[in-house]
Length: 75
Image 1 (tube, one colour):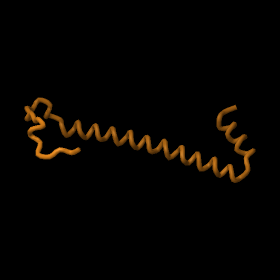
Image 2: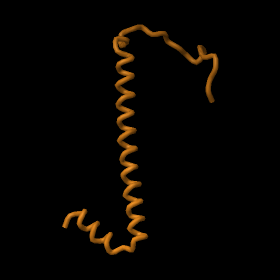
Image 3: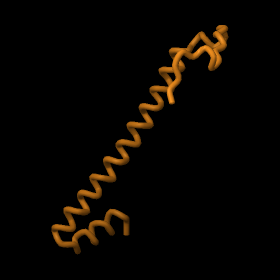
């Protein structure tokens, strides 16, 4: 018996109030998965964007900064 069939069988044994609770939980799980996928996609775009912005700058000489160069520090 597949998981879907088992879920359906067990769900039918519950009173309507608990069936709605199960539906709410399914919605919660679906939303959680969606947020993870969105965050992963955003991280990929951020990485790609940074790579494109830095393209061609890999071999440029950049100034060396130390803490003495800071005018303000964040605590």
